Length: 370
Ligand SMILES: Cc1ncc(C[n+]2csc(CCOP(=O)(O)OP(=O)(O)O)c2C)c(N)n1
Image (tube, rainbow, N blue to C red):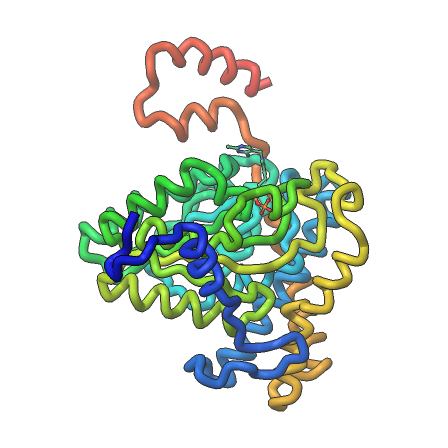
């Protein structure tokens, strides 16, 4: 094989050259210092404070959700601590008309997009009301099938494109999800149609117990987007400012008709995979945990904002207090929802009763009336 210049083309050197080009994008370092002045950060002081408040709220929501789960008051729960920058700062770059297609760990983003928290709690309990999204809140229910939301996002983005909407479809998966067929199909399809999508891979280092190193031979997950023709970036997922800017820019390109982008956020989940019983001490060491805790997104953002005179202990205490009250009110409202009945499920699933369900419906209606 000869190159244009008549030299031998070296596919191995070519691979290394491409991989080396992926540097992790960072704006705010672990000390809370701006290390990238050229990043064109456009957030006002109020917006910076709002972003921090949302991240603090989300950390408290995680702590409360874990304890509610342990008390048997929540069902399925996938912890989010450590991923606040990746989740909340990417969401902060979105607009209300954008569509979010979340995975099971992405409940905070859909709550901040408008899903009432009490409904999110009902979703966790498997209650159908949790899946009934209010009109005008552009989200799908969290996806449990790993990677499936990637193909769905390509479809939603194509639909928005065809309707001439100036909005994007945004989806999230983990590093494990990036090994699924659906991942490749989704990014490829959206790339081919230049659809307005943003594909975010939250590389939190583990897919349950499988470490990132065993997930793929590719040295970055971001580079997978290049094969599908997508502008792709690897971002410090513990840095809220870098995540915000990368998502903002991806959104701008998508809305301008320049097609989809891929963002890999390098982050860490502090807790277990879910509350269903995995034990992270069997696949991670406390050394690794503490190495990542030093990168904590809230700690570094707190340092930065405090230095700027925008944040204080009192302000944080206020946000925490308010979060606890909101969470308490939401779980109370979830508790007040009527117990779901089989007849409810049949009613909401069918506009007209199918003949084959009629008999069963009547049997259940009778049972439930007792
Ligand atoms: C198609 C499919 N295969 C397997 C599973 C079981 N499963 C649930 S979570 C998970 C790991 C996913 O890890 P990752 O994509 O990295 O996301 P994270 O949980 O770390 O956010 C697996 C394999 C599933 N839900 N769907």
